[in-house]
Amino acid sequence: MKTTRRDFLRATSLGLTLPFIPAIPAIHAEESNLEWRFGVIPDTQWKTNMDAPFYGTAIHIIDAVNAEMIRQKVDFVLEVGDLVEEAFTEAFQTRAQHNKILYETGIKFYPLRGNHDSNNNITPVCCSTMVAQYKAAFPNLPGTLGNGGSSPKLPNAAGMTYSFTHKNGKFLLLDTFPLVDDGSEDGKAYKIGDYQSWIDAELSKDDHQFALVFAHKDLLGQNHKDNVFSDDVTNQDSFPETQNAFIASLQKYGVKNFICGHDHMYHRSRIKSPDGKSEIQQIICGSAAHKFYLPEPPFLARETSLVKELNRIGFLIVHVNNNSLRIAYHSTEPFGQEPLSPKWEIRDSFSNTFN
Ligand SMILES: [Fe+2]
Image 1 (spheres, rainbow, N blue to C red):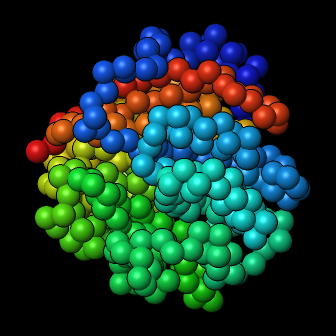
Image 2: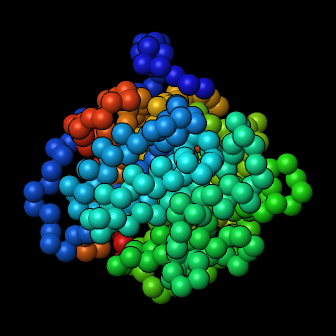
């Protein structure tokens, strides 16, 4: 469902939950020299699906976010999927070209596919073609030969679902979209359960002090009711044993945050597993796209909503300092197709410690 500013104002005037979030000063002047940072950019689709210069990717928003990433001296930027509106060569190439300023500054970019990166409604092609187009734009990712990191030992998973370490952190990016032409219309996608033994193995390694796990789809969405476990919008408790095992694994290995996109809003919540035995914090990290969605019931009792912001362009900066993470959500008013230098405000900030 696409919403407009007018829809948003009407919805909030009807009593939709929108907690007051005080603006937090944007600059922490006393940052330690030991601190390092990385950025997370959410979905970057743009509405001009097939046309230059956008080719369905929000190049002006990407440029504005990248400028702020450089200003904040991040080591790398990670995107949680839906880089483009429709999966085709020019779209992926355009998205990649707008990272040039990052690469020139020595900042790496780690992408992850979303549902839009694995689907072309205008000129349908088989999934292996879209995967090849994506890989051509984003080559040499961790998990591929000679590029470090790790990927599950599954056909075509290398560099699509992958982990890498950076300084004292470890990062797992999970691709849950079609990767293998198996004769079906969409192709075969791996499920979280297919990855679980690899996830456990990666998280159990003694090569990091903290770890974060990323996927495009959510554990529980506010608007979207499909999730990282299933496309069944009628049952968010699908595959409960898979959900229990995944969230238990994150808790067991000290992963305190699961970061995702897909819902085009900022929402931080605590989510219990269906069996109630384990829990994780979920961060739906905003929208860097033309689309915004509003929360829609049902909401499950095993999710506790903490902070929510709708209808703003945003991204995360993660600050790593000694034995703590501070995750800061920055946002600004939506803007049109013109280049802009927005004023970013920190609208949520919280810390976790690790040992
Ligand atoms: Fe999505």
